[in-house]
Length: 114
Length: 112
Image 1 (cartoon, rainbow over the protein chains, first blue to last red):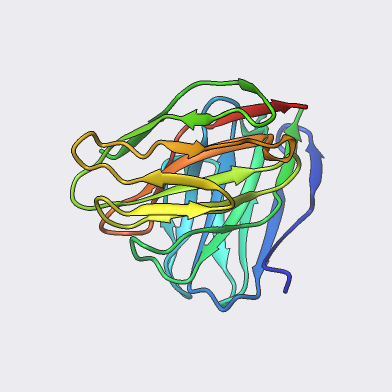
Image 2: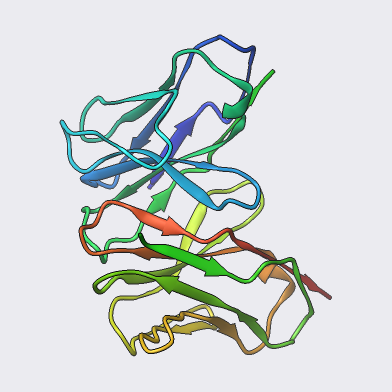
């Protein structure tokens, strides 16, 4: 059981380049999330998808777009990368969006923008 | 809005020492509280959770009690091992769902 799978694991971009981070889960979860992790700041929510067909902004959505392709897959796109987007990106899923439902995380994508 | 504050690290302990990592929160309504652990190079994993006041979550020797009167959810373990070295995150998921709020994380080093 793979859980949440993210690709790629590492990426280096030049300022202005674009890329898409891929995420897939095999737990039949309804809700999916993208977080970024920066030193001393914990995790901050970029976008989330409460259920297939819906997406909503989190705390730090500027510079990002998302697509919930189907129930399994939720991608994050950087249209024009900036150095401020250097971070570790985590995709997560939960069975549902309710208060008791814990998150299941992938292993992250480490992105460097030069 | 909702927030989580946890003690800054790093925390360095010798093997078999007692561990406490403090966590306090601010929230409206009745949130659920979580501790997640992150080992090097990996994503976060759920360690334990508590969904209502006075609940105690426990797993792998770790415990935390949901204290509404002090708005706290401190993580404890009686005897730490080298393998417990990791970063620990306190988190809150509020009523209205969707958004889990994380503390900044506390790095724990355990020396043999």
